[in-house]
Image (cartoon, rainbow, N blue to C red; front, side, top):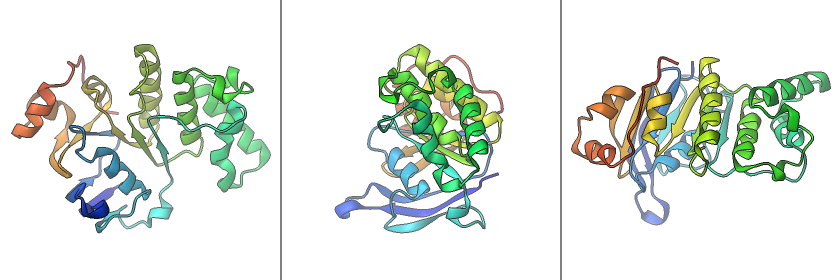
Length: 240
């Protein structure tokens, strides 16, 4: 299990406080959602955890493991695809692993099948629909068998059917043992997927705990104000 320890994290580009003394320990398996209003620092927090941004203070640790020892993947809101086929795009993630040709092919086929794109493996990636492109981005992230998967609003621009397909892939990945950090504005999605929730406001965590408890009975006035302004939800995730 991946244990993430965030201590007094600070990020102040050009002196402007974006993350201001953020601390948390994320030790549960399954899916942890990061929610909060625009400008709260959710996406920046995700990038700091992954190492895509360098903090101005504080630290992110993975228990007693070196950051480079934790196999992880990042999926952005808008997938970045290169010219080439679906298979070629997914295969890019495998290059550092130096697998045998057979093992790489088997892993690619299995992952593309899991995301419902094996039948499109030889098609041009950029001709896929928006939902299919995001499923390809997930395939590229999952093909390395990550211990930690970071997702930044992965369904923000998708219709309900495409969103449901992405959520099922995320749910299965969590059930298979991948720890997932999910930034989302969709509280229905958080309710369906997340085991626990971090609520951010002005670069700090104001609540952290069980997803159902936080969404139904938030303790802080800031969390209540944010949650009451969001869309309704239908069900809470079972243990992932």
